[in-house]
Amino acid sequence: SPTNLVWTCPALPSAIINGTQFDPHEAAPTGGTFVVYAYSEYNGCSTTDSTTVQINPLPVVSAGNDKVFCENVGSVLLDTMANPFNVKFGIWSILSPSTPASALTTTNNPPGYSYFFNTSVAGVGNHELIYKYKDLVTNCENTDTVLFQIIPIPVANAGSLVDICTDHGLV
Image 1: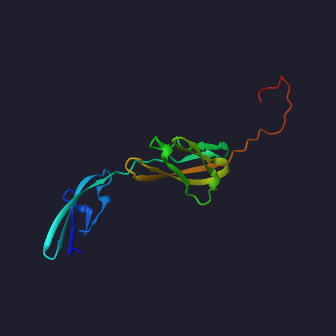
Image 2: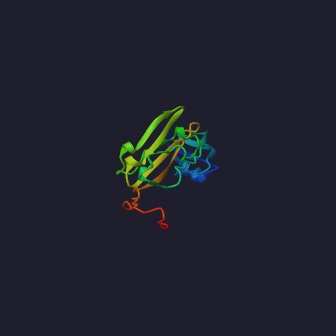
Image 3: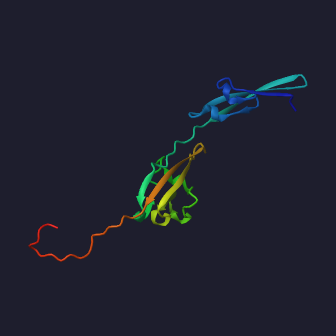
C-alpha cells in the first residue's frame, strides 16, 4: 500500500482536511465542481491521479410560517404551506412527543402524497412538525420545522332568554 497518499484541491484548499479527507461543507451553500488530485508514493515510485467532485447545494426548503389555529378548525392541508412548490415529494413528520401520531394523515395524490394536520385530534397546545424534501435530481435533502399553536375554542354566552316587547328600546 502507498506510504504517502495526499489529496489536494487547488480551487478550494480549505476543503481538504489533513491531506486525507474532502469536506463538502466547505463548498456550501452554492456547491460547485472541483478537481481533486491524489499523490501517492510506494517504494520510491510516485504517481498522481485526479477526479472531479460535483458538490450540489441543498434544496431551499420551507415548512411555512408558524401558525395559530383554533382547536375546531379540523384538517389543515400542509401541501400549500411548504416550499418548494412540488411538495408531493416531501415528507411531513411530527416532532413533538405529546402530539398524537393520528393528528397527521396522508392521502395518495399521484405522483406523490398530500399531508393533513388535524387540529381537533392534536388538541390544545404547541405542536412542532418537520418537513423533509429530497431533490429528485441531485438526491440532496433538507428540512425545516414549523410550530402550530392550537388554542381552545372560545366560549360564547349570549345570556338567558329575555322577553321584550316590540316597542322596547334598543337592546
